[in-house]
Length: 430
Ligand code: GUN
Ligand code: ZN
Image (cartoon, rainbow, N blue to C red; front, side, top):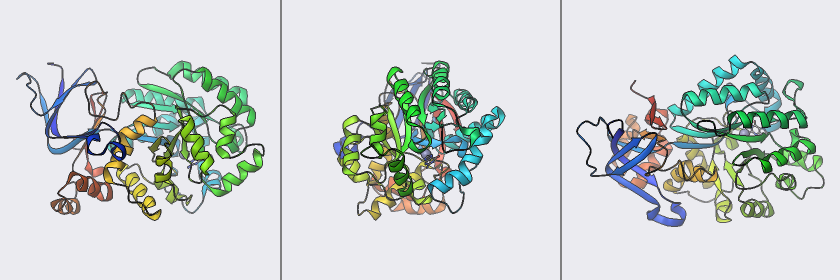
């Protein structure tokens, strides 16, 4: 106990999905204490008796909650964020592919990884599912920087053997071999987890997708991530490239690329049949709302996919996404649902950004909660980080309304501190 880290403050945690379990899904301690030992939460409560020798960090009326989880992001696109005026296919060829070419240089990859992870921590994120580039050194750089920050991260080398610049292309076999070598080097080393990462169907030949499916099948605990049904021109292109498939998602289904460890960004324009296929196979769909608005891709059907039982996560999709902030991401999800005639409750949005995404990333038994035995990935929210928010909070009487005001008004100034595996990794008042 003498080596424990002890935090006090208001504490919020989810035990389940509030849209299913109602108020029981939420635990709240007004004067809570969280004890961390060996990177794990060992106790939580209001009246814990602690030895006098224990040092306590008192966060007062700040809110201690689980670190946010970003279900989909591209670290090499940190320089691409805020690129003007293009929709998906033009955005990829004009901005993204030229930038990703630079990541054959390990020094560039290390610097971008560090900047990306620090920006994530500063915004309260502690886990993400991340695309590197097709260069294996870009993966080494990312996992090295993630390890230095004690972060639980999922990442992988992009597979791409067609329809991209020469310097970004692998082949079906070299992509397979490089992925296998990276799995051997990184998966399960420290807190790192590997994702086989075919970028999307247009940039992988059928042979490459088939080999990705074989690797996925034979790699215990390894993830699969890709993109699906984001943009109408992309969908038409996939129809031309894969005329035998019944739908975009069916291209991946035929290659053995669906399942509970498979994560797909977007799924905006899914048919009912694709929604049913995602739900039946337990395939995760990551809603990336700032990206969908910024690239002009469309309005995700959150309510419909959730009701059908599709596992959902929220993602920033940086750099197609326009923000590193979980608040901006939740706000954009709220606004997109509003345009579909549904008002997502604030507790559903906070759940989606933490435990909900953790579950969809098959990590719901390790991260995403402030609960005994969970990894101590925490963020501390200052609920009065600007004069406007302090003023608005005066009339926010319920926790629900307080959370909603944060979603709509807060930014990185609201992140007071972020802990990864029990270590203080970001401190606003350093
Ligand atoms: N589809 C294929 N590649 C990408 C990418 O890098 N970003 C987004 N938003 N969609 C994609
Ligand atoms: Zn993406």
